[in-house]
Image 1 (cartoon, rainbow, N blue to C red):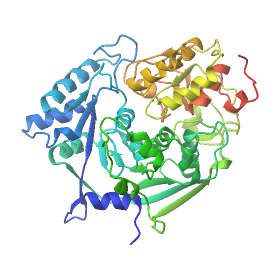
Image 2: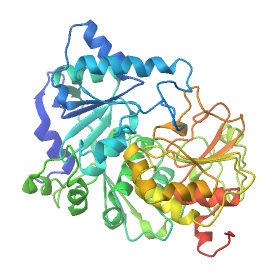
Image 3: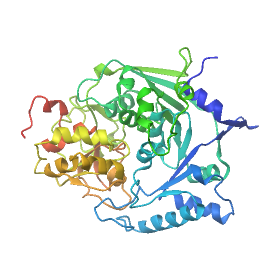
Length: 459
């Protein structure tokens, strides 16, 4: 019987089907971070339950670490230092791999796991973080879980799940210039709603997806969370295999027939199918308080929930173009990889951000990414253009009582969420691609990156 890629991974990991109809699934990799790691590991230790296979469990400091140069265990989050010190102690006691604050391999979970070859095609990977689905870009079944589920997975190497439905989202055609994977994701969510993927594992396919580099595929899978999908996945191909080759935790000689078999069969059936013509897409920007409140940058704001309009301070019928911004942020597990930084720096070179911005900053997704960017001189381009250059971490992706701005400040950000207060009390967030963030930072207001082609912005 023809199978989807999800079917193949699921079937290979089934341990048993329980009397209630749920499935006990084998878990290959588990990641923890400092917001949840200490609690899960300490609870297990108190109950006398060891980690069943420490080699499969990894912990990282990423969510609340200080990203300013010269950082240590202190954080900008009140009481945050305890999360770091307790996770460190618990991880060392459990014998699991820890990427500490100043470890050369430290970074955001969903950035360093692929960078190090920890996630591999055909494997299962979980973490107590909703954007774990990012890693499905490598052909893995990866999804976010809760802290108690993390305990179960670490103790038994399994998790109990109800089998999700399947969906295929095909992006046909070729993306126009300055339209990116971020715009693909926002267009999908705007058209089909923030709940459009609920209860499904989404497989992204089609010519436009195949044309993306691996980092772009990660961006697309990352935002499946904002589509309410359980997970997202993209079939591995020669790009995937080349990208993984030589990475520390990847096999020196991978099982070529197995990895190449990790794709949906030609006649495999999905529970739902969506098709989008990539050639019709434009740069996207969110306007409200949900990722589904997104629109083509040159369109007029549609009528939405009254509360969303009130919070964001924009009315239906207004253009987004020209809306003044206070802050520009490039970072997060969505858009802080090396290719993101290269594209942003290419647009910034020889230019400077608008004088009215209160802050513009770049936070690389990992320390390895930061070092690679610095080796290419990208840091100097950002600094010369007026951006701050930081150490890696989640940073302004979310507000944890740390770094923020005055209420009412308007940010344009490469992050994945624009909820009320997501970047601080009263902060108004517009999510967009790195190209759109750069164009807006140069102009001092929300701006179309395609205008850079027309040289509308001075050097």
